[in-house]
Length: 333
Image (cartoon, rainbow, N blue to C red; front, side, top):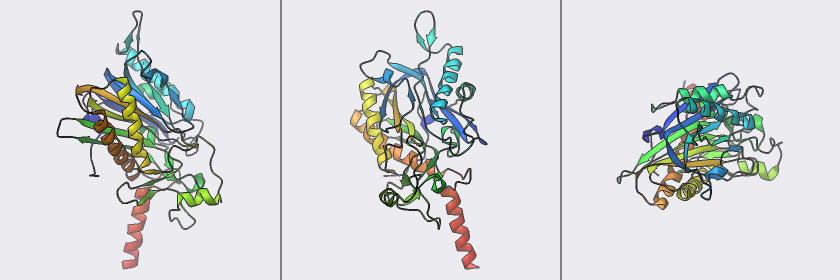
């Protein structure tokens, strides 16, 4: 799998904005599709927090969404989507029902209350500001937006965790098909490189070496944090023409990207949820879109980990790499 450097804003018609509280360590990320986009969803984790996902079923009526909100704050963070709705309504964007235009804004949340200040969560105002600031410009990754308070490797207890974050990637094919992903990685499990199998981030032992996550589960020597206190959420997008049924299939296939990088995935402790959108510019095979979406999602997961910085006394991949280099330099003196 070739490494892809890109962003979900490479797809025309998608804007992204973020808001975060760097002291409370929480935030939200908003994707705007002001012209509307076909959307599907697949919820695989057993402790999800979502909004408007039933609407995305192929048997239901509304065909397009105008934004997607990814947020920290657990169920409290769903408030941020109301701020996105408020912004879009001010712009005259939404489903026209005659007496009003109703913005359609699905959302998913992750649990980040354990890292920072649990009394501060993404609000309506934060969602509004994230939508207002959304643009087609490339954006920073790691400790930003919905990834601000994300952590991974909690199967051995939160005190053994490492920093998760927000990542994005994109890939363009020779036929003009463009596929991209954005993901906030907040898994109970560990994250591995999908190419080499190297552990990038996970549960740490007493010596700060990374533990085998399955050994932690088997031995059960540590207290695990409560059910649902994790969750990886994200979006895959393409410039293809999709029906709602096809968008749901792409979201389903994109979960393979999580399974290639996060061990274990879709647990009772996670509420893993992925959305899929198509902006309707080119025709392409759904099988091709789904297969590449899984690869791009895996790349976005890796970027989320590699771009994260330490926070709240929780180390990151970057801080461990810096320490390792410094240790080598010290030994060479």
